[in-house]
Amino acid sequence: MKLKKLGSIILSVAMMASLGSCGVTEEGESEVQLAIDEAETMTYDELVAKAKEEVGEDSIEVYGNSSALEAALESFTESTGIGTVNNKLGDTELYEKLTNTLANDTYVADMVLAQDDNKLQTTMLNNNLLLNYVPLDYVDVLDADDLDPTAAVYLN
Image 1: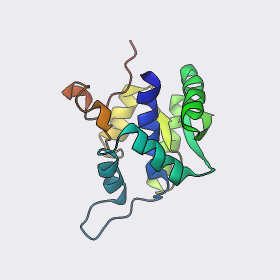
Image 2: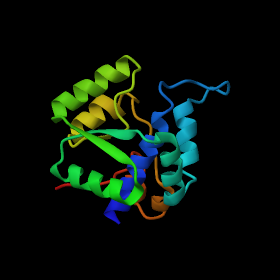
Image 3: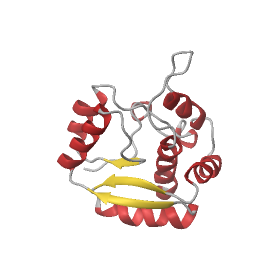
Image 4: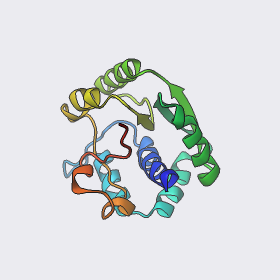
């Protein structure tokens, strides 16, 4: 179940990676938001198929600093056939990279595992730099407080 949860999150971000910058449709909604809206209606198996189609022979670019991330990514690749590249950065380096990348509207990663909740809130969420995604399989499973933003893992 943990792999499926991580997989859903990885796939959702990977699916949007090919969109590049956040273009806006004629209706005023961002292309990324449209991709999220579509992903929220898809099952895990549909997300895997869509991600394989979009990623192709490439790998998903991942940034994080958890020791458990490497094993989770290996399991993800084994179960889905989608390759991953794990770039290990400390929280300070990670947030600097994200902030600079977002400010320049350039691509940096398909998935980021951040562990500094305070920095996540103050740097990213308070500035509306992240869009929320709730996997279809978890809408009825997670508490309402865990849906915006979607909470994947709790550490004491």
